[in-house]
Image (tube, helix red, strand yellow):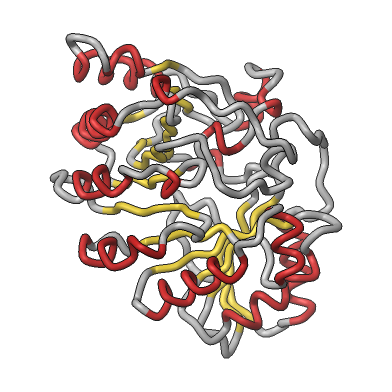
Length: 327
């Protein structure tokens, strides 16, 4: 079992498989994109397998595959097939923009990988295309409908962007009220490749809730696990639920159970902090499993207590793009 220096049990790994993405969302990176790393600096599928095996052996029972966009990686299903065979790994999930998942839906279902987070920041076509800078609206919605209709546990991640998509908050709830999905509204964070900086946000989780409940006054708060990053609710008469993730306000740090490993092997114990180690050379060495295990233990043993504390150690954290950090 992994326990950090603040007595928090770490059982959840967010494992990035690529820093590349086929969209160019304006809150994530500049219009010209970012400098993606060379392939030889990315962990191979076999190296990702080893990292996952070591962490599962250390008590991780939940792995979320992230990117970039995971399905940009042609060999992603090789890794997912392997993960389903790991004893002790109870929950495998994927975060995707749903542009490339279509050909893999049948196999994902057959493997029992049914927890899918879809990044979708607009229900309106024009707003979607303006934010993503790409023409993928129909593909995303077709794949989303298919995932829902085939019984996947779908959560929609909607980042609320001032002046861009707040007008879509109520409409997306109206559309999704007929389906057993969770629509989760996230506060914007300044991980955009340095193209925009800010110290405060208009649409914090309280403002989002006020906006929603003005339109839907009959709602109830749901019980959520202590480690949940979202505060969850259900509107009367809706099959769907909605959640609020205070990703900028960072109210959930006290119960954080997450660890990130980026596509290049950086170990990140807090989204707002510096990498604590890099596993790439270690996993390519003669004593890969032992050295990776030691590095993980050392990283977990020196975690910041909160995201605000972690940020103090990393003055240039917001120069990064979310696609390079690992979702």
